Structures are given as C-alpha cells and as structure tokens.
Amino acid sequence: MAAVAQQSRFGGAIWTILAWVIALIFFFPIFWMIFTSFKTDADAVKPEFLFVFKPTLENYLNMTENYDYWRFAINSVITASFATLFALVVGIPAAYAMAFNPSRHTKDILMWMLSTKMLPAAAVLYPMTFLTKNFLDIYDTHFLVILVLCLINLPIAIWMLFTYFKEVPKEIIEAGQMDGVTTWGEIKDILVPLAWGGVASTALLTFIFCWNEAYWTVRLTTTEAATLSKLIEGNRAPEGLFFGRLSAVSTAAVGPIIVLGWFCQKQLVRGLTFGAVK
Picture 1: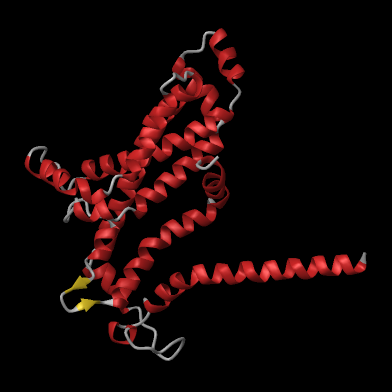
Picture 2: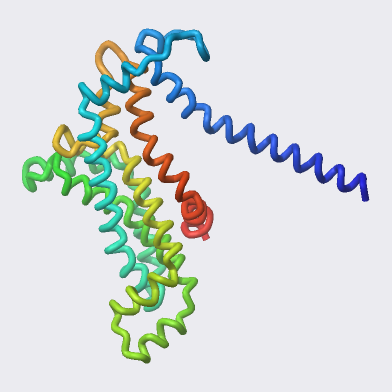
C-alpha cells in the first residue's frame, strides 16, 4: 500500500510539473511582449535577454501622448460591448425557439449557421467595402463595426445558448405556459434566470471574440471607429516594425481582456469546455 501511495504521489508530481511547463510555454509569448514593451525600438531588435538593457516607459508615454490610445480603447469597448449585447438580444430568442419549439429543419438551420463560419473573410472583403463606401455610406462608423462583429459571432452565440437552454427541463416552460406566462415572460422570468450561467459564459466569450477581432476592424475603419487592432497595425512602416512601440500597444490592448478573463475564469472555462462543444 505504501508503494502504491508513493507511486501515486510521484505520478501526481510529474503531471503537476508537466502542467506548469505547458503553462509557461503558452505564457512565454505574453511575457516576451510585456518584457519588450519596456525596451527602446533599438534595444528590441538586439539579442540581449533579461536585464541587459535599461528599462524605459518611453513606448507607453508615446502611445498615450502621440497615438491617442484612449480613443482607440474607447472604440474597442463600445463596439465589443454593443456587438455582444445585440448578439444576445437576437441569440436568446432564436435559441429559445429552437430549443423548445423545434421543427424538422432546426438541425439544418443550426448547421447552416455554423457553416457560415467556414466562409473565408477575404472572399467578401471587396463587396463589403464597396457597398459600405459607395452605397450605404457607413464605412468607418461604429454602426458598421458593431453590425459586422455581431453577425460574425452570432452563430457561435446561438449554438452555445441553444446547448444551455436544452438543459432546462421543458416541463418548467410548459408550467409557465399553463399559468398564462407570455413568451417574453418565459424568456425573461424563467429561462434566463435558470440558464444565467450559460448566458454569462456566452456573453463573456462573445465579448472576447469581438475585442480580439482584427481582420474586419482593420479593413472597415480608418480613423473614426478604429479600434485597438487598428492602432497595433499602425505601428508598421516601410522601414519595418517598431517592436518596442508595437509591444507596448499590444500589451495595452490585451491587458484589459486578460484581466477580465482572470476575474471571470469560471464562466470562461464553463463556456469553452461545456457550452460550445457538448
């Protein structure tokens, strides 16, 4: 018994060490980005490591004073927040209908929505740019960015909500119907409170996807609705990449979402490992 217990402890220690090694491998790019953000552009391209350079806040000061970081950050918050809100406003009723009033086409509709994620974004870039610039006149507006972010994340949101809503016993909804509760009442007073953890997970993941979206936010904006992705992309010049400034901007861009994910990690893990893949 002692030998078995010792072997079990040894195996647990091995798995713990392996988990830490994998975690450090995944965290290293973030560490390197933060580390490089305190170097000058000249030092950033040198092979020195650790403390062989003089740390500086020049990149962060330059980012806030010359690149108007806060305007880009506010645009990111506005577009990600409203896109998440609209995705939930549309996704909750859609998932409710498919979960509790399914038809023979429900599975086909779900698969069709998921298949839209397989479309290469570059395939519709030109028509999207042409229409928004020349006909709709909404290019480089918050409305366009919010609309695009909402639509590209709506299929995932509906799939996750549908999975969570299927866990709610249908008898509870039927009991509400027998008591005369309206459809809106069923959603607001019964379904959402019972599936609040799933709704929160969906909202969190949708917000992260919207915040991290770079392809569309870079190509559909110039100045007015430009997000942090556009600010990062702006640290590129014919002379090359300014790695010090680029690292500082990238750190400031990913910092808020990392903090949000840290405080909401329970909902995040639940959404990643349960809601979307069950």
